[in-house]
Each structure stands twice: as structure tokens, then as C-alpha cells.
Length: 439
Image 1 (cartoon, rainbow, N blue to C red):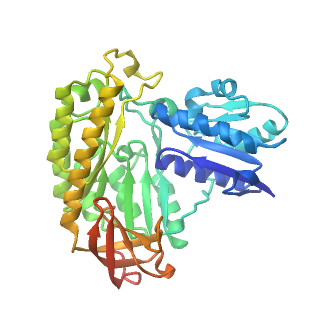
Image 2: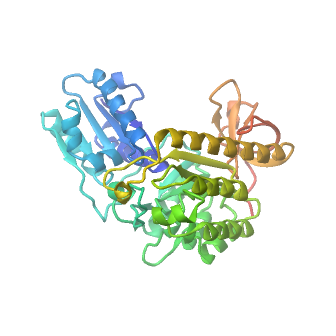
């Protein structure tokens, strides 16, 4: 029995890709192991969005090589593999293969060649590749990621994704609905649709509004989420589909990157501050009670104190439920490399500290206001600490509650009894597992 060990870094798309790789290798007789000591093949599925993520992977490769025995294979896959290509083979002599996101179908052959001593890289883009015939091997029977779109046609000056994921292409609606239907038959009740700019989805006949309605109508699907959307792709049709499809959850991750229109122009984002605020208003009108999170980059080249103050004021104006904040990281090959007016590292560090403090203060204020309210939660599994269970509301709030393991995978109504500022404690009121999907 051959064993495969995969470590996954980065976004939900990478998690989904690891599930695909397990599906590809499972057909060849490989069995997954969570212990690198047992593995015949060790793969690191990588992120290339920030330099820190790449440095972390390089450090991890140095650790994993200790587990490599004669005949074993050590590989780098995913976005970092795509970006660096054969250079990785030169940089890390212990690495046997390098494969980009469109090359996973060739894993068995490249592994076989690596066993014979051949080190190889496959980073060719395949515009047709959606892995439709590969059943992913998923860990979570309750909630599933479903990739509906690969690649990106937007050319934000800071972003390496078009270089690592290739041009945008969407799966056929019928194929997506079929996959979700098969998931529902096995007991999955929540799905998250994945794409780099997921709401720009279009398969040539159907747009994202059609996709939301089709997936939301699948029998057994109670919750429908998606990530990551692009702000200006929330068309009236998409907003209407969100408002009228009961399974669509009241939560949107809406990346803004900066609150300064000047900086947004330099980033080549397709909106300014005013347009973004209009999208927020449209979402809140279409989906009452919607929770919003965002991505923000601090220290983009040329960012002044006035630009940063505009970001702070936008965070206060929108009152995000959460924000993922990052210091700008130079990415080789992106247009932003040519912008020379870089913000000093110590200033970026100071600014991100101020931003995080504001985000947490607003989130805490909003969450304190939710204490005492009741919500439907999906019990996801044991909490990371203690003997509690972890559950999630439709608005993506994490709640911890006491209960038996038999509750995992069920829906319950709970009252939120307290908050740390980010997560909640909750008290169960009633079981909802037997209830039909919301109408």
C-alpha cells in the first residue's frame, strides 16, 4: 500500500486542489496518511500570494526532506510551483517534482519518473482542465468546497494569481449542479462555491445568478456560500438570486484592498471608494442582516498617511464583521514591481497594527450587540480546545457550545450567551436537523 502525505497552505482553492490530488492518486492505489514518516510521496501544496508564504514553504521543505527515504518522492505543487517552475528544482535539491495547478492529472506519471531518478516540472496552463472526471477525496462529510471557476482575467497590479492560475474559465452549470447533487446524496448539507472572482462566473450560457439558483435548488443543500467575489460583479441579477435563494447564507467576503480611491487606481481595481460603498449598500438592501468581511493591503507602493487614513475611515464606515489584513509584499512579475515609491517596512508594520486594532474594536462592538440573540447553527465538530463543540451561524460567526458528539453535522437553534470579541459561547435551544431547508 502506497501512502501520500499532503500539506496545504493558502486559500480554500488550495484545499480543494489537495482534495483533487488525493482523488487522482487514490485511483492509482495511494492511501492518505497524516504522518510524513509513513509516506512514500510527500507533497506541499503552496501559496504564492505573499513572500512570507513562500519562505515558510521553503523552510518546511527543509524539514520534510528528513523523512525522505530512498525511493520516496518529495514534490512542490500549486501556485508557488507554478510561479517558480524548474527554478525550484535548482533551489531545493531534495525536491523531485514541481507541478502547477493544471498539472495534477499527470501526478502518477511524474511520481513514477521521479522514482527512477528523473526530476521534472510541469507548469503548463491547460485552458480546458476542470478535472471533471476526478472525484475529490474530502475530509469533511458535512461541508464541502466546490470549485466552479479556475484562473483570473483581472490584472490587479499587486496580484500574482493570473500568473499562477492562468486565464479565467468556468465549469458548466450542469457539471457543478451534478457534483453538488452527489454530495447531497452522501449527507453534505453545506457547500461553498470557489473561484478567484467567483461572481464573474459564466459558462457561456449561464451566469452566477443562474448558478446560485441551480445549486440552491439541489435537494438536501441547506446552506450555500461562495468566495471570493469581486465587488463590481454583483449585478442586479446576482443580487436578486441571493435575495430569493433561501440556501444562500447571509455572509459575503468582499475584498476592498484599500479605502483610498487613489490607491485603488494604482492597484488597477475596477472601482473607487464610492463605488465600493454603493456595492455594500446594495448587498445590505438585498440581504438584510448580511455580515461582511474583507481583505485589506497596507503599505502598497506610494501609500501616503492620507491614503491610509482613508482606509481606516472606510473600515469605520462599512463596519466590517472581520478583515484579513496584509502588509504589501513585492511579487516578481507583477506590474507593481515597477512602482518604486515603496513604503518602509517599519511604517507598514505600524500601520497594520493600527488597522488590526480598529478592525477588532469594531468586530467586538458588533459581536457584543449579538449576545442574547438566537441563531441557527451547523455543528461542525469538536472545538480546538476543551470539551466543547464548534458551530457556525449562517453569518459565519463561530459559536462554542456543550453537547454530545452525536450533534456533529446537525443543525440547532442556539442563544448566544457571551463573546470573546471574535467567537461566541452559546446555549442550545432546539434541534433543527429534521427541519426542511429554510424557505
